[in-house]
Each structure stands twice: as C-alpha cells, then as structure tokens.
Length: 536
Image (tube, rainbow, N blue to C red; front, side, top):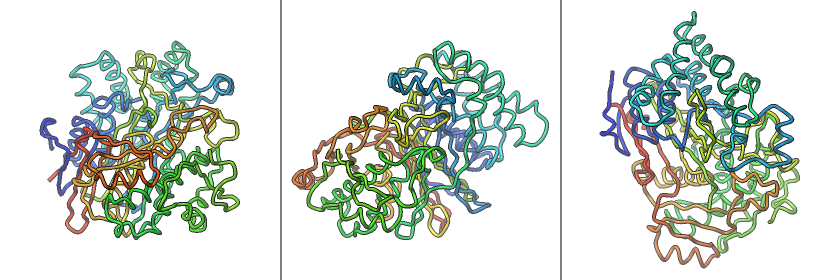
C-alpha cells in the first residue's frame, strides 16, 4: 500500500510505476493511493474523479459530467465513455424550453441527469479491478473530515452504494451494476426526483432510469505520425482534429515557437475549425454530423486557402461540407462561464485515461436535497434554434466544451492532456500538443510556457436561439504578457484585436509516457493550481 501526504504533492512529478495529474492535491492523492494498492488506471481515475467532486467542488460536482478516454492495454484499443447526462424526455419540458429559453442563471431546469456516478461505476465495471468501496474510500475520508453542510448527506449516498455492492451476490461487475441501479432506479433516484419536483425542475425517475454511459469509438486523425484521439461531436473535441488537419500543411517548427507567423496561423486555423464546430456539431444520436467530410483531405484542402498569412479574419466562416464549398453562403456574420477540472492517469501495465470532469455549478438552487448530489446547468450548452444540430430535444446530450485528449505513437499512448476552461480547452490543448510534437517540450515545460487563444467563436454557454448573437468577440486574440512586445505589435498590425494578460490561459494537465525507459512525466500548470504525483 502506498500513502502520500497531500502537503507533499506539487505540480510536476516523474515516476516509473504510474502517475496522476489533476486539479486538487487531495484528488491526486486519491488516485495515487489506488495505484499504490495495485489498482489500474481506470481504478485510479475513478478514485480521482470522485475526490475531485469534493476538492474541486464548484468546478466539478458528483452530479456533473465526465467525458472519459481510455486506452486498454490488454485489448490494445481506445474507447470513449460518455459520462454526460441528457435533457428531460418529456416533450412538455422541451416545449417549455422552446417557448421560454434554456435558463442560464443556475436554475435546476437547466440540469441534465447526473452523469459522473454512472461514468465511474461503468469505468470500474468495464476496465477496473477494484470495488466501488475501495475507490471511494479516499473521498469518504474527505467528506468525513467535514467542511460543508452537504458533506454528510453525500457521504450517506455514497455509503448506500457501498451497501448495495456488499449485499449483492455475484461477480464484481454485477455488484457494480447493482450499485448503479440503486442510484438511477432505486431509492436514491426517488430522493432525486423529489428534489427536482421541489425545485420545479423537469427531470423525473424515468429520465434517471433511462440514463446510460455510452461507450463509443474515438474520433481520430493522424498528425505527422501521431494518432490524436478525441471524443465525438457531442463535445467540441473534433474541431481540434480539424485545426490540426489545416495546420499539417505548414512548417510550424520552421516558423519558430511563439513567433508572429506561428501564433497567427494557429489562431486563424482555430477560427475556421470553431466556425464549423458552432455550425455542425451536436449529439450524433440525434444530428447527422458530417464528421468524416469535415475531417477529409478534400474539405481541408478547400478550407486551408482561407488562412491569410498577412491578415487576421474578423468573419465567422463556416464551410459547407455537403456541397464542398469553402464558405457556407450566409455563414459570415470573454469566453462563457464554465466550471471544469482535469484528470489524467497512467499505470505500469500500459493503461491510460484522460478525462475532463465538470459540473458548471453556477447559482444552482440547492445541493441535491437529502442526497447531497450537487447538480450543474449544462443544458445551457444546448440551444433553442429550430433545425440546429444542437437544438434541445427529448433525451439529447448537450454539445459540451469538455474535451480530453489522448495521443498515440505507433498504436501506443504517449500523451494524455486535460484542460479546464470552457471554450479555451482545445485551444490550450493545441498549444500543448504542438509544444510537444513540433518542439519536443516535456510536460514540465509545456504547461508553463506562454499561451494564446481567441474569442472569435460562439459562446458555448449561450443558448440564444439567434446564434449570431452568441458571438463572443470577432478578431480577438488573448496572449500571455511573456510573449515578446515585437511579436505582439506585429500581430496587431495583421489585424488581431489583442488583449495581453498575466494570468494563466485555461488550466491544463499533461502526462507523457516514455515507452523506451518506462518513465512517466506528469505536470499541471502551477499558475492554474494544477497538481501531479507519480509512483516510483
């Protein structure tokens, strides 16, 4: 057994037997504790995520959502688990949203079904080796130490799941399924429904019972010999792949890290990719997202010439992948609030997890009543624009910003990246990914070098049916102040509307696995209060 003092956990770590990088130090300690008990990456990730709902509460909560990418070393495959709740199935509820709009003030009407509990139990069932009792142990210790008035109530709920696990006959997997059923179909679900009714929410027992953690194939592209794995278009993740496809036509290394040309071409590629994100992405169970075409060489080739190396675009320019037109006719026209944290884990057997837990807890009415299950308002990431692929429908997943990343080399994971920061997430991931692939930076350096981002996109947290009105700031560019004055002046000359800031742009964690030496390198940006630890 391995124990670690939370006070000893820093922002970077190197080890030979596994590593964890995440938000709160207490959550990193939970993951390391499970790795030290011979748990695998799925076990440790579940422990970390459960603890993050306490250490990072507000950025995440147990009633929140977790997109989760895992590499299974035994099967040599990558899968995505969609730990995301859905809109109510009631057509009456959907009619209310369409008439009144989706609340953005923390109203429980904007809460999806809790997805994190189902995600953790499903990950343990499919990929783990430990019991729920074992992986939730560090979280119960945090809750039992006291702090907030909902701690005892959530502890009771978690212990109910342990009770069901212990009293159920059969395999480890059947015990986990029984615990999941108690949360989504049993007395816990009854208590949640009573709270929804009390707070005038729309979710009901039927919605809870219908919840499943979908298991999907990742969206992948090849970028200069690396396989980049993302979640599907129910997240913003595929647009990172679109941006990389545009950028593979440039000599980025030759431009120089953080040079004027380098920053300019990345930002212009991001603008084009996000325009397609905002136009075409949505839950693929409901929407026909032309993802294969958006990522195709033919479509990329007609979009790349839109990047003007001398001038910054101030137009929103989605393409038309159906007609193979570079700019869709009629398409020209401060990041939104977000609560998110981070989690990447690797074990000594070759399993790797990248997850981005979130809850978007803003002004939520209450904290789950007797269950202590805090909810968020992620349904605000849907909209009420008829015909839009992300328009709210019964049982639909919102198109979320949460977007973990895994990168393979010759079929084996070498990088896992997770970022908190709403619409900044994949912009920051692009920064870190290229820091590594083009410039050879290790995580310790990559998470700390200056970053940049644009607000030239629609706000993913604005459900306004007039999508043009959701535009944040055309032509914007935010850069860290460490980027040189001459570069900043040249970018302004090219037409970028620049803001210079001192604070961290988003909050990344990054994990590199050196397969030749069996060494794990984990780091989180200390300026964004990220933490990392490793076993040696």
